[in-house]
Length: 503
Image 1 (tube, rainbow, N blue to C red):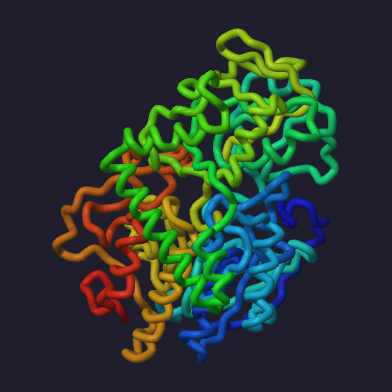
Image 2 (image 1 turned 180 degrees about the vertical axis):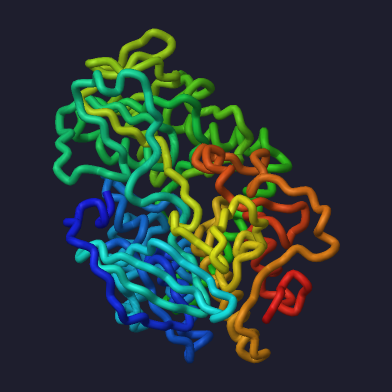
């Protein structure tokens, strides 16, 4: 539950003063803190502010409090390129928050952050060449106004205040407690209780081993299986380099390059040799669960590897819980909730004291902020994305949307370079406004959904694709999700290209 939901709601009052900043960064999560670092380093003369609706930095790592919360990407690539990561590759939320806190302190970013500032609306005026942003203080109810030349959207892609939970029949009949991981109660007592976790993604794979020892029993109820990579939570190369007393900055860079090369090869093979990759992934699961376990039913997805995110399971902890008998998996669909638990479509009743709905995110586009351009409401579904960063018809704004097949933060760094270069280019040329627009050769370009479902199709995207910008059939008008191409393409974007319209 967000701070906005838990804070008292005093009488709203409006502050008359309007503060101006060259750049307004929305969100103090992993993207926003990275954006602030790059802006300071590459555009040191720019004034900026970071507005965040929460009461502290961290975004996802601040709001998610469920047991075992950890990264499912390695921290050598999920960490920023400019600050070495020195711990185990898979890190807890507390470790990630500590790392981010060091970035904020070391770079004096803290004074630029305004917490408990929930943005309500943003209005662009071509006459003024400015965005006017209205924000509400979630602790006092005060309404504040800011103006800015450029909006750097780093608020993520889902609603922090609530997760996605399907409306199953009979939920009101269940006598126990229903919990979504995104709004985890601090006082939830699951010791000695029977627990069902609905879902098969990274959240379920984190919660189950973290709770298994304390529960009477914990059951994963999944409609369909997911691919996992079980492996030791260590980076052998980095550890060896440390023994050789190599500088941490070098270790960070070398480890990143090795990981990214391995990930590129894994991604290539998932497209070109999907059956071989499938067999390797399932073989790793079999090592933990044995030949007699029904891996075909419970851990063999119908889709090829990488059509949905593949979560890393440190030390195979999820499978160790299943092998020990403390946890089990049921692959079935839900018929309805009952007083005692859940009735599946196959007719089995699973009894529980607590049901955890690890059923995913509730996606939103650009923080559900009410955007207008010259008094006309912006519907982002009517726009075309420019490389997953900017939108046709929306001036002086970029959205940081990271990678699914590689670490999110890799794109934070790449976009930090691109946006800083764009801002410097505008200053050098004396431009106040930049908008991306389809070129003459793009006018009859076929448009389709923001991401190709044959390429990547997690449920939270498929449910909300109608809200997202459209894509074209050319690289400029797509969010490719391909870090290995973008690391070369984004630094070489021609800022004088016809797709950029300056004024």
